Image (cartoon, rainbow, N blue to C red; front, top):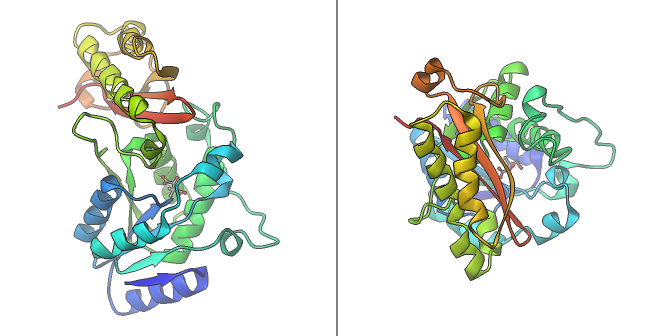
Length: 287
Ligand code: PAF
């Protein structure tokens, strides 16, 4: 496995692979790799000849400097995990390499960035879209894999790749969950033992909504079923729960029969445990 820290070196290697007729699969990460990331790497390996993983904690997408500072950075473990997973190249640039003096261009997502997480995290999706555009430019992949846990991020990046003709296929990988149902996330390591136990309220709340949706089209009733579970957990602080269209991300108020049958409705939530913010989502009408 080879490691690059400069975008130019990364791109030169990618060009060599392309010239040799190899396809490149890409998994962008902010490190603190867990088995969810390993599943994304395996997915990329099934779809491409060589896999590149980027490890970069992107300052542009953090609203809170404390969140950026406390983001876990176990770089040696991450490089070992990539090597163990059969990754061909790791791209781990410095902030100075990605945002050198004079850097000024930003990618601004459209309406997809203005709903759900958008109002609560000003500038976040602009930071994500900008860094992902830069990473795609350095790695030049044929296919890039993103987890569905960050569903809004996945939609924004898919739209960006289409709108900007980036020539890369964007794949959404199903959420990888711990045995108790909690979605795997690099932030989970920052939960205390009690908070980690309490975090089970998040997937349970979504499951309660799925059950409620079997009997009603009224989204308020469905969201209340989810809320009741979170409110019943003393360590949880609820931020939002929304039922949304999986393509437009627009909030849905009343469900129609068509929405029930086409599997395009999801429910998403954000819940705090101490200073850790967890997000999760799922199909409201699983097959
Ligand atoms: O999902 C993440 O880990 C990050 O938002 C990403 C896509 C690597 C961009 O920094």
